[in-house]
Amino acid sequence: MKALIFIALKKAVLAILLVTTTSSIFAQNGSKRPNIVFIMADDLGYGDLGAYGQVKIETKHIDSLASSGMKFDNFYAGTSVCAPSRSSLMTGQHTGHTYVRGNKEIEPEGQEPLADSVQTIAMLLQKAGYTTGAFGKWGLGMVGTTGAPDQKGFDEFYGYNCQRQSHRYYPTHLWHNTKRIELDGNGLMAQGEYAPALIQERTLAFIDANKDKPFFLYVPTVLPHAELAGPEDEYYKQYAQKFDEKPYRGNDYGSKATVPGYNSVEKPHAMYASMVSRMDAYVGQIVERLRRNNLLDNTIIIFTSDNGAHKEGGADPNFFNSSGGLRGTKRDLYEGGIKTPFIAYWPGKIAKGKTSNYLGAFWDIMPTLADLAKTDHPRYTDGISFVPTLLGYSKKQKQHDYLYWEFHEDGGRQAVRKGDWKLILQKVMSGSPTMELYNLKKDPKEQHNIAIDNPKKVMELRSLIEKAHVESSIFPLITKLQ
Image (cartoon, rainbow, N blue to C red):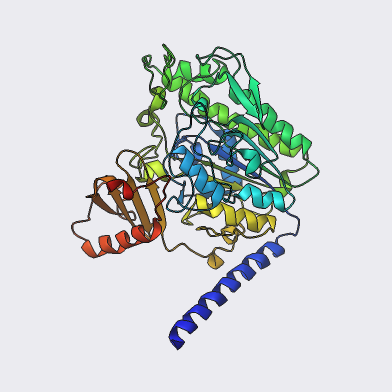
């Protein structure tokens, strides 16, 4: 009994020391709360940026953030598909705990909404006095539901509420808060108003309107998500001349909706590259607008992607090496499906040109931003604040015991990483999942399944999977067997 009490007291003291250390570190680096800009690409692969080895697509603005800030080599998305990855980001919980765990569609528009009881990072920051804005794709609750942006901590939202609608770059409408904004588009390529440009205008206007108070700007851009479409401007023309390719004729862009000729792309490689470069240009415009308003020195900018590279609409991750040599793409729990580029930039606070090996994931964002904003800590989080790493105190950084993911399509998948070891369960809903074990230090491309040779390690990691997964009645995984 005494031993148990001692262990409990030891854990409590360590927790207090961690909070005290983080607060002390932050105090040493200035007392003014920073503006927070969090930019998240849609389906951008780990290898799609120059900073991560891309050689065919120009991403000079994002590469500049990496060279002037900190690049993370071991950061992971919430999971390998849109809605649950975003839920993990917003709630600070991995997919064994977070409320939304799959792309559950609601008709005629929207996805399964976050419950009224769910706390988000935007709610914490809003309560702390931050003005909050989201511009891009939401996908966590339609207007009028408990999961709508205005119910989850955002003062302003402009963009696609429904992620099905975001498959179309020339849509029939967007949403501004609770108001439906009718557009000239009809869902056909290059007909009507180009939604990313409209969203970018609102993004920049938000910075101008809130330059005199702390703000949280969340930019979940739809680029370079399928479909492959956009203006045939200078971004497209430079690649159209560069790549010799065959036209793509198809309609596979990850949606049940079909429009004849919708995804007929004359030069799919050129279009994809232009979409990535256009997104990069938008990031450059955000940085410039911050500079113009004298906000850059007191703003932390984070850039990442929601999951791995996609294949829909004619996208060709093999041509671009979009996964950076890693195995897998979107919907896989291999590294290429969940490992994401992650860059943090904060002049004078984050040292230039640093690369971090911190092993982190989307559920770390909530406690990290809460620390930076000096606000209340989340009611519950699976995450760890990595403020010590950002500010150059990596020796004081707490580490994860393990990271966990699950995926609810294609028969169900689960994965856990502990140190260099990673276990993936495939076809979980079958009742007899196949098991794949990899040592990522020796085999970063996950080419050699060594589960048979390491039964004890498999048992150890499988017990972590069982510990991490809490069954959901809305998104059942294990109980689908019954």
